[in-house]
Image (cartoon, rainbow, N blue to C red):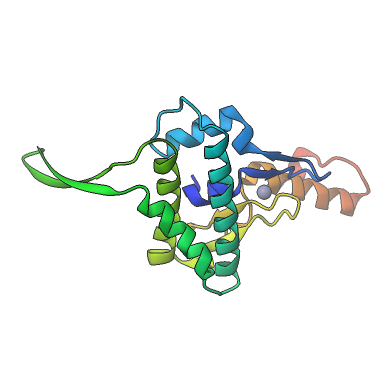
Length: 190
Ligand SMILES: [Zn+2]
């Protein structure tokens, strides 16, 4: 599963089959409730217009920052400030919890709702900046798709968002270019 920051960028969905189709998945209740659950937030109620706008602003910040990192540059100062604001609005508190034969120190997020969602997504990007490897940030090799991915494969061989979609599409297209429009036989799939 891709990190939260990539998932938010990819909510600006482009039709991977070409043709220029586009959907802002922040406006898609099914996508949004799944995203909320990934952020550790109840899937209902969904964020209102102001919350969804805040998600779009963070998405633009993350897209610019990830693009800068891919080019070997640092994210812009204003973008880092925007990320820091999201982190500041979702403060943690520490607590000790007994269990499992000992006492553990826990970090408990004190924010809920949209502040928590923005905080979780910003934290995933902060983690990338602090301990991640920017050279693993990639954009799906299908130009129509444009998904951002974080390549966690050992040999950095990931090329597609989900190989079952874009990977197969490009293979079929290349086959057709070579063989003049006919569909590939099952044996032709590599
Ligand atoms: Zn793709």
